[in-house]
Length: 163
Image (tube, rainbow, N blue to C red):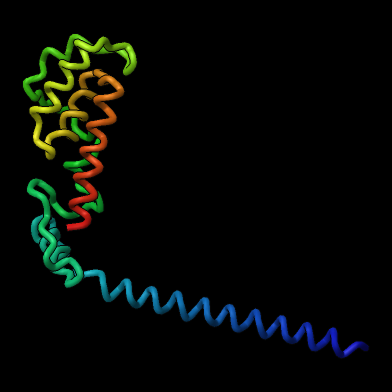
């Protein structure tokens, strides 16, 4: 019997055991850290109490939640571009209903200017709601307007995460 093969086999088994032990300890440490960082949320139907419990996390002190956000979601639903309610909100843009069913690249420069006029009158916080409203109304904005609006929304999200 060749002892070098036996020693090599034992070395691999020991190496496997060391890796398994390190993996177990790392996972245990991560679970403990996550439990320490997660606040205890009281069992209540009151979302305000639950939202307040989330902001009591010491790592989030100094963070100011944007107005209208409940704090229960990683990304504020207010800034979400997915429409969750069938409610259509108009932003003094009723004239855009004439473009229902058009494709993003089928607009003339005068028509693009109409969308741009509306976009320029909106507050940053209203842009995502405006895009949801257009979606619910079946209006696809011109590609250049969509790109600009998405840039505004993504910058707003980045600023709210960094603050």
